[in-house]
Length: 514
Image (cartoon, rainbow, N blue to C red; front, side, top):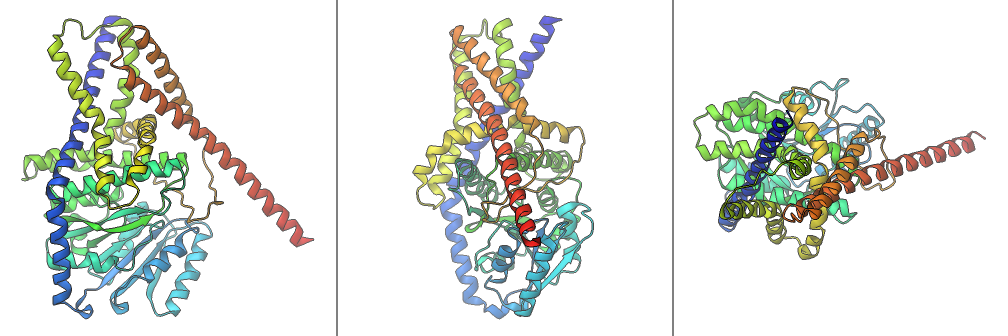
């Protein structure tokens, strides 16, 4: 029985290792497609945009509806509305819908702001639902039913679009009737606020600068990122409309739309800054939603992708894309299996040295692939100070490993068919003193336990003079311990700050009454 369990553990370890290698090498594919096409596509886009405005006047622009899905986000909803109203686009051709499902005082803030902008002559409407059916997807669907525009721009509450956003995105859809979506690049409002936000910004830059560019320019399936993009209404209709059966309604709709024959376009030079979570527990909740929703989408759309008459490379790309968060179970399984396989089993016994060298080379190249992608992304992002930002790469690596416990839970929750609820990521809107209620981070206890387990395994490997696995176990240990400890630290700091704020309010109330 013991031998069977060890054999099974080795099989799991090997499968997880192969998975990590496969996802690692997919980074090199993205880097290749990005570098191959970057100069040509970006120059072509700029030329086409200039030509469009040589041939068209502002009066020729189409009707656009901008949708702003909001839920309990009083800290930043006014900033969002101000930014959208300031967009440089003909007033008579720009409708704004504020889709507010709020259950707190955000609704009053939104209503007041909407009335203010209506008085200034903006075509802005407030649509308030008394239920959250299908969450964000439901709100967007309800807004689309009464939208005037043939194009629908979407911004989440923590985004601040530039004035020229519509002028730099809508023309691509006018020039190519097959384009169903134009996606902009995310920027960062609070990149330098903390080590956590800096690390996140590097990760997001990797996704947008390299991965989204590679998918779009390499003619692979790409996804709408839920915000900072413009949809053609007909592309949404042909895809079957917004659906709320996954937590990533944006990715789900993107794939259904592309399967219906529509193209997705990523515009590298259109950057929309947004707020990054500065709390580790908020970040983990966001990642949990993205991980679970991605796997839900994979389960839903991949059967259709495999049956579709599209190139094999597109099918492979779609599989790697939608199942990308599977890297976290792979990381967790390799971390958990490493020590038992050392203590009781010698799976590599008898393997020729040349084969072992080849395997190690593949593992090493796969391990550095994400860092290589982030390096290329920072180098080509167009932002200044990229060399300095790369100093935070170790923190990003530790963060990526440390959330593996939480995201593994998300992946298995999706596989088991648990839909779950849409938990929004709290935003402060520039208010550093804003705090939000959190649940006790039970998962952090498991992260600390796994971190200690990895430390023990690392020491055993060092004692056995098997140093090849050592660096990986060291990274796992640092990642799990750091994320677990930071989760508890920021939870208690938040609770203390909330208590102090409550006391201030009580004192102010008593003073007013007296």
